[in-house]
Amino acid sequence: MPIFIPFKAYRPKPEFAHKVAAKPYDVLSTEEAREEAKDNPLSFLHVGKPEIDLDPSIDIYDPRVYEKGRENLMKLINDGILVQDPEPFFYIWSQTMGERTQIGIVGCASVDDYWNDKIKKHEKTRKDKEEDRCNHVRVTNAHTGPIFLTYKDNYEINQIVESIIQNNPVYDFISEDNVRQRVWIVSDKEKINQIQKLLSEIDYFYVADGHHRSAAAAIVGRERQLANPNHKGDEEYNYFLAVLFPASHLLIMDYNRIVMDLNNLSKEDFLNRLKEVVDLEKKSTRFKPTKKGEIGMYLDKEWYKLEIKPKYFQTNDPVESLDISILQNHILSPILGIDDPRTSKRIDFVGGIRGLEELERKVNSGEWAVAFAMFPTSINELMSIADAGKIMPPKSTWFEPKLKDGLFVHFLD
Image (cartoon, rainbow, N blue to C red; front, top):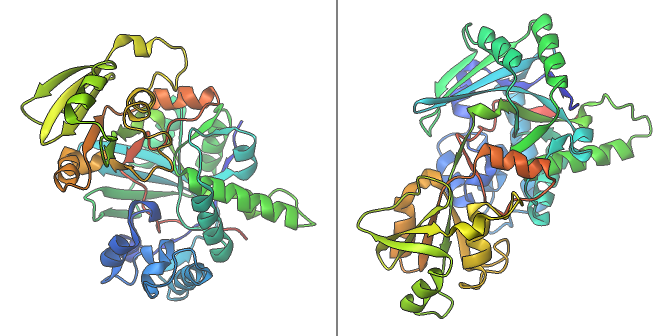
């Protein structure tokens, strides 16, 4: 069974939490991060994307970038902005976006569990992005952003968490994305032991979001294990920062596609080819899919409803039956020539949080020819694929709200 332990977090004093908390490094470009953090020296973007404090001519993977990240992290500690708790604690983190709230347990997961698949993955990682996060962990000697994990709901754990959040939180603020962030400290040893025991009875944890971070944490943890002749197994580098959410709390939004051109097809030829795979219906307004098997398409300033023909769902393979797989395998690849969406420069991905308006904007700009709006992958589909040891297509899931960086830091020693 997977291990989850309390830890002595470095975290902001309550009066600084709203200033420190920042979007994760991978949802902003360098330019966006530079703009967002320019008037806020406490923003954790200075740690997660430290290139924003260097000359723009410096490559984002330059060693000076990681050194700057460490320098900025240590400044937050030396200035008393981040302070370490005296004992290992769990923390409860609640995020409320609109009418929805997700509540998770903050602690540390096991590097060994990552390698032995007690923590299940559903995405491939890219080596360049993996190495970037490895270098960030190596140089800062810290996990500065939490990995987003989930597990199948457990009633007893939910009851303990509910009892804890009846108390006053240590943090309670609205972040810049209009999400209410609340944190409670679990310092009671009896409750810590109860949580640990119940979590130890869970079969598996699943990486929901943060595959590159978790891979980097596991790689650097393994490096530290091999480099330590006196390795015992209880050192801090054997664990990485994570937040565990029950599956029922999570919201997966659509992750949409835009394609640069029609692969030398005329509009009429393209639509005719599409009819081999889907039933096509022109719409007078924006079309957002309402169920599995539906795709919205924006082409030449018009919206279409695409309904995938039933024969494409006649498979027992949990990956092949995903809407995104059917789009890729039967439309993007054979019709539009996008054979590998991981490497093709002719395709891009737009998170559902940006709305259908963003798809229209991209296509209307003339830089992109067609957009596809997807129905979200479900958490059950994600778990089924991970349980089968299979890999989802890239950019299959967009979780909201995102976890903030900066509220918790875990050092490797």
